[in-house]
Length: 578
Image (cartoon, rainbow, N blue to C red; front, side, top):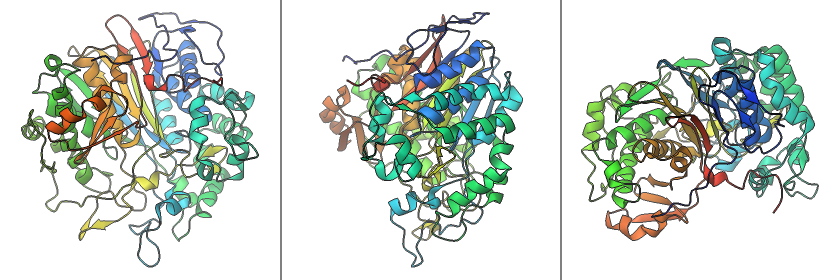
């Protein structure tokens, strides 16, 4: 089998252990080739945001400083996916193996209740009606989270981290092919507000062409205010009152967002979720994220199989991968939610003996007829019901390692493309509350991931850091793409560890994913050609599509840190028309 793997755009040339950063003059609005050599590495889905992070490392900043600068720059150049109008998860690991995680997930307003998405007659509101309203908007958490991270681990002044993003918004940035394609067909969402229409569309309602320079004066004001005032400029001022009013006025029921909801937002330190895979230590974000549990379970359930000997071009390898996914996601649907509101048996779910018990259900020759959730230690005596969460979509992942060997893996999101469509302060507000189950109960049983006031919706985000068997930093990795995120992340780790692939090739491995008994295979790849083979294993319902994939990583290859983004982005980041 031959994979058509293309080197990630502008992966920087990085000098391992370089004590003195060496920098060439570079515009953060360009699509740089190899322009900068630094002691460390940055991966981001947009080269201009990656350049912002590299500039922080070159100035002597920490991995945390660089990651914050990337998030802020993405708010400007990647408005469809992430930014300060949403939330995220931050995973940090030091060179000596100390891991910490911060939860910046959005929260439901205090007035929200399990009937949040119900009409007065007790029926579910049409999804799009709920989506394009204040019902879908949670209190943004990114700024609170990065402020807490900077207070603990920042080296550069807070205001300096905003400079690249402010420059991009003030001087203007060029529309790349990816943004142009994201805007196409999204006029009713991205152009929901007058500001959105004026900023991103032509007068006749067409997406602004590739290469068009876009400025965003409202976000310049927002970023300059935050740079000067810190979190007070977002959560404690008249700005917070205006934010809450904007959302509440678009909320077609009582209980909408208030200034007190915004004032009261807290980014929380969480216990990292860690596991072992072939001697490597794999750590990520716990609830309300399902990401780390799913990644650790997928890997742990596969450990008894010799994937390296089977090989990357063997259908058996990927049948096993599918089966492990199915078991992990069956647990995810029942048990994972905000652990401040429901009992999530995290330790039981990632206990090696439980994962071995689940792994024993995997048959290398045939598919499980129906993957059911297990019963880990700590599971509730009466199981939660499976909810009806709509598919997740948006998100951006970025990863950094600095000269000290500290890794940061950070996934940021506004949920779907252009979030709720509502714009405030020049940025799109998230639609994260649609990540809750729209129905609070099923078949007489409550759903763990139901809406409740102050609660954080379950997420698939899986920012992950990996240490090698000697305990040394090995990789920071993660992905965007909704429910495919844990699968993309686990696949990338398998590519690095089992198949010893270069990081860009590991990220470029084709995707196949199980959705219950249905299997999605990436269209145009070797997997599509193997449809009959997978059917012979018992995977009867196979769909070939091109799912939204956007993984990223930094990886120590034994000689240097190497940065890569998903090669599927190749060409989409160009700012010149074809």
